[in-house]
Image 1: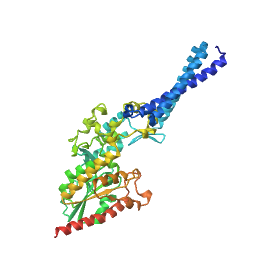
Image 2: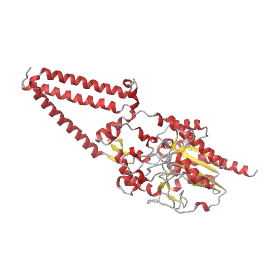
Image 3: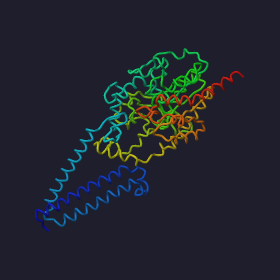
Length: 471
């Protein structure tokens, strides 16, 4: 069959549409393949997963479009060469221009923040190479896109046992934070807190919310607690930004118990439980915090895997995360064989991948049950250590907008350890005044509310201990 010029263009246009459909089908099928968990390939349930269904839909579009192309090619064999040449050229030009336009728009509008790139109000996680580069610049003291972490790298310093800790006798450039001679948050830099001779001591351990990040010392949780318990009790703030429960436990064993506190308050948010599962926090976009200790949760008795820790420079000297020791104990290891290729690809591809991240099926090794199990063992260990040292442990759950508290409750049920939940106390503060602008840390009002709520339990513990000492 032959066609006139008008008919040729009409069928060529149809062929172009078929080519678009084939490309769409290929993209859908490849996306389903990309999202297919590796273990599914060993079962007969591939088609019953969302990824499997998407892959089948993509293949169906591909097959139907291919059939229609073959059918038209056979019908109009006389003009086959012209049809294919014109259709292929048109398809390549339009697809290339469209992709280039979107990529250009995304790159122009992309903005960097501490957790990743923001494109069209969608957060895209940093790629592996970007994570390494940002951390190298941060550790090297460079400014620019790592300025968010730069001051943390001067106040919170590398520690071969804990990963990082508060530097001794430090002050941040803006004067917001100071540390004592012993490396505790203090009102004045370099003060020697051990010189005090109080009747009792209360030690505050935890993460950035225990440290009270983003507020001055006079608005911190520890400062407000000091006001409630009185001058006869010294409140010591051992909080460290970014700590997981495992680091809190190790911090107590090494740095806190020698102070012989009468009460030990462990303040934590729910995300601290998940931090316990990490080995390399910088792969979570925490460029200033490169490596941390990790307990082997596979053993009947918990043992540390990687202490003494390598230096940040040693960790970042490798060419790829695959070369890092104990990477299999970090959730980063769950990334499938396609992920690195996609992460280093065009922004539009990374954007599509980010929108579908919820499809990733979690491995049982890092499931909520695994997180609860490991942290329950750590909380129980911490309680036993504090009690054996003659002190009263108080575990203080601090609410966070991104958590429900369900994981925490499950963990403490397993640990059989009492929990002091501050959710109701924080809720008494007007909602817009609970957290600072970042949304992660408490305001002065919220810290004051927490201190007020927990002070009764602290005073009761102190009175009981002192009463017992006079018998």
